[in-house]
Length: 506
Ligand SMILES: Nc1ncnc2c1ncn2[C@@H]1O[C@H](COP(=O)(O)OP(=O)(O)OP(=O)(O)O)[C@@H](O)[C@H]1O
Ligand SMILES: [Mg+2]
Image (cartoon, rainbow, N blue to C red):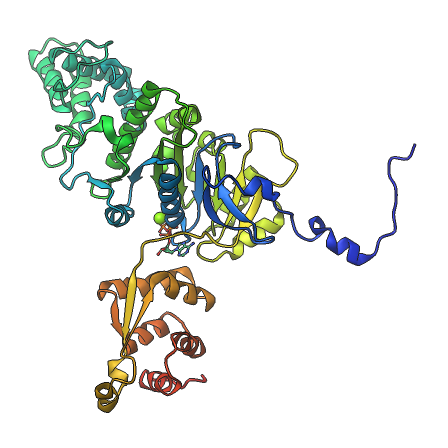
């Protein structure tokens, strides 16, 4: 019996077999889902299939988003959150390290909690949890963020004092707390340790002193963001629509990570206590953007959250510039990964090794512009098609930002008084951005131009604008094309170019 059969074939036949020249995309049946149970994201680059995301057939609802600054990570996250809210009524909690979602959340009438700018979190708050569980979590956080793990005596001193503080307020350690009962703060815990030190009978006073010192960094006057009564109802975080927890005001990474860990712990307990429900969608989505310490540590509650999320219909989105900042466990729990342009060849290779996509996709990633991404999905059952494909562009719906260009300076008095020539041109940010992308401007330059535009109240005189374009390396033919695309008359364009010191052909 022959196993292999040779066949004569014409080269154009080979050309038609797309797998030989391009990696095929997943079939439409895997990309187009029930519109009432899926989120539209964009069209695929080869066959232009509209891709709508659903986690129902995926191993996990969690999403990883990787890309350089300005590549479109947050834009995608906002698109996902907004549409998940339309489709499934999903709540969202953004753990916002850089405060970059704040204005968007305000615009969409969500709730912004700005720690260190008027809002506080008491890390001893129970939100329905048993005090003993909270104590364990506080110790784990201190273990991740400080060196307490290496000093067993200090660890048990701290643990005992935390428990004692709850007992002193009338809590039973292993029972769910009564509603509305006032909880202690880290200041009470520190006082207990100080009293013990003053009694002078403890055998190892130096250990006591170190324990006090470690806790005090989170309870100092002016930096006691975690040692005061909470200014928000933690139990309601996952049912309050869109919530941005802005951590950018906290003094350093350690404080930000402590807040993030605390919030994840609270949400994890919340989802466990709610249990499973019949609803098809996601109840809540938690976003961790640039939270490297929280996403990279294998002891972090981000991992437990991700492990149990599917069961309880909670999704996790982790966005980062570097895929290496995300722990392998979290990485393996991502049902979907979006890969935007990456900064470093090492990152691309790491992602390629983990997700096992073809060199074609890899080459595409290296050429991506803003908003373009490769998507990888891990299905529940084995599949016979490639699990990574490229999206032409994320079709999002960012808020509208209108920018205006004022032409008065290049018009004559008579033109202005006759009112026949348009003096002001208004454009939407994405429209301008798309034009810049067409002119092959790099992300840094585009961001610079918008920064100048934003700092002048989104309105600029045309000549100032042209100067900024030039200083960012935009050449005259591109400037002319840009002005033409606004339907500015040729004679005015010639004037603009010559007033700004150039001739239209150079
Ligand atoms: N698909 C897209 N369509 C249109 N505009 C986009 C798209 N993706 C991103 N943008 C725009 O590009 C800019 C940068 O995008 P974004 O803030 O999402 O970048 P980022 O990857 O989150 O960067 P950083 O790491 O600095 O937070 C934003 O002004 C955004 O509106
Ligand atoms: Mg971002």
